[in-house]
Length: 295
Ligand code: PMV
Image 1 (cartoon, helix red, strand yellow):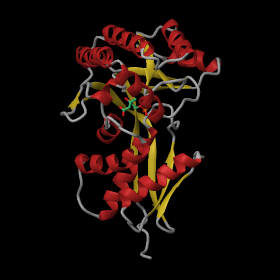
Image 2 (cartoon, protein in one colour; image 1 turned 60 degrees about the horizontal axis):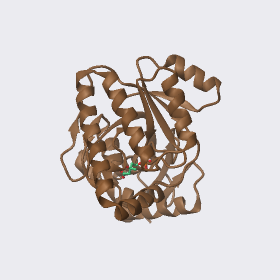
Image 3 (cartoon, protein in one colour; image 1 turned 135 degrees about the vertical axis):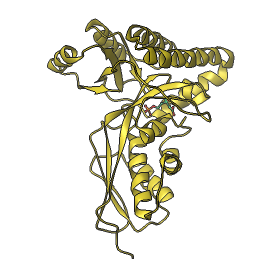
Image 4 (cartoon, helix red, strand yellow; image 1 turned 90 degrees about the vertical axis):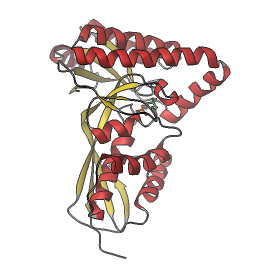
């Protein structure tokens, strides 16, 4: 066995989908941004392999081992992964992990590399975690900025005229993205015309959202987020718990609020605020787990 590479460390940020989850799987544009929370991968002494400080379900642990084996191709590296990102709640934890590990593996090879190399290697890992990912999660993480992404198309950076201050609040545990995406796929296969129309409308909202961000029109971006949530709700991707948090964020003064990520029965909800300080304080006092993230 060769000596492990020591002293290397790499970070992958988590992400928030502002507008366009699920429709992204079917090639529609999606507006997403990287957040400050994320995953760090470090090379540590020991036998080659990967270890995570968080508790994983057996199936998640197996997916992690498979993903690492596929990406590392036997590299003599022991990787320890730590995260300040809640796992499996729609904030792109698996993509952040894939990007952090991909960067670490590329660093260990000792050659120069860029975002395309990180994307390629991270995609190998994401493929093991998700059935048919659109690629928005690991692209947002690898680029570390606000983007308008389209599967198979060029990714555009979106420059915000005004700071985007978002509250990320938790609405409880949820089923795996794979399961939620598969359920939606069944409905879309059964009623293709209607779902195609709905997905296309969501893609249009995402493109309009990118323009609103560029103009600094937070009121319009908020409205687009509200409409997006309505369509996700119509497609059975929301729940009572999610809707309660969405309503709460709106009542606390959000320009707009919606579920983010795969949704389903729980997960993360976002609200767009001019100044979220008061909302964070009140939600925290009520026992809702939340944090502010600039985009
Ligand atoms: O796994 P999550 O909750 O971060 O959601 C990913 C977003 C989806 O659009 C639902 C799936 C995808 O691959 O784009």
